[in-house]
Image 1: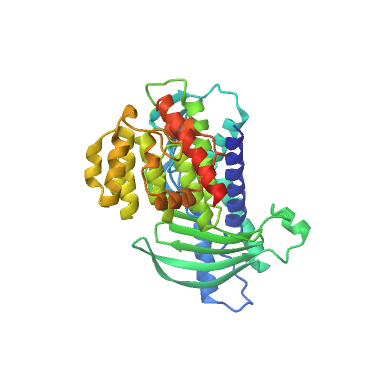
Image 2: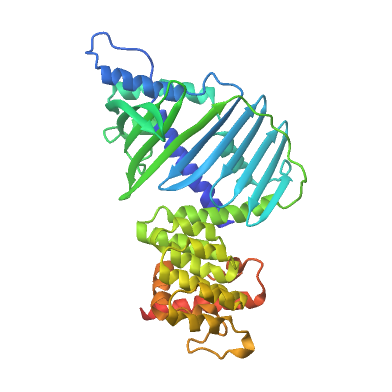
Length: 435
């Protein structure tokens, strides 16, 4: 539950930063007749203003967009149809759907091979209520748009917003008009900053880009530095169309909320990785993939993706993953792991290195045909890969016993698999301590 609270708090912080940052642009068509007209400034201000006003005159709609924070991407689909609302979020960990229909709320969660849909109208939980409030805040709000628009003129007049350039651009194959500008609040007084909701410990400088087509702003991005770390937020609009029908989900159960907690804990673990530097981020992603038995996350682990897959193969037993391994050495190790996990020597035919074929055949033997290896593993296919690659995988994944999540890694595997996972973690810890 603490992880979920941290995630919701993190989302609230992101929303606050975005609300402040986006509220600072917004413009009016008023111009000072005595001032020199700068065409770039005029056009840039209009693009920002139109972006702030986006959605103001839209009542019922379907709006799809992606959000990327430091490389961690989520896909959103919002539908407003009369007084009913629908939100779908694909966050690379799972899929969540929330229905606000009449005076009822429904939650559907698809995660870790399970899908649960429940009515949550009568769940009295402040954290769930805050999460729903956050989701509703993603819809267009006329009062908020008016407030943001009115705020812009004052900030622009005081030169807290400075247009740097306007040019033609192309985003994902779509031509648009790009405005680049900066927002800098370093010269604000404490009282003035407080009036805008800007606290002393918040970032004071943002570099923005907005790209607009005649129909909608398709791209918004800002970069800022906080406590010495650079952060980047990007939103890309996918569609704005007529409202689709919102129908209540069927086949209701009681497990959606508990599954949401599990999904958000995993999501929190993954999203936290993207606040780290490249090396630590890749270790963190690999570790998260192992902890939650999610090999699909390995593709996000960069240079450590091969080691990530090899570590997971004994538990998920999916030979198709070996085809995704790029390194020849690690690919051999992957098939050795499959042979050891399934006790099927046919996988050894795919091992290219002759020196490893015997290791593979040994791994494929059933328990009473093998003896305990010098590393202390009984029948663990992890013992059969060569020492060089095993050490490399350990260094790349960075998995230590601190995770203590062999149950999560094995999912619905038997107690034997759990024991193997425990031994792997213990061995990894020994290797890290001696490296």
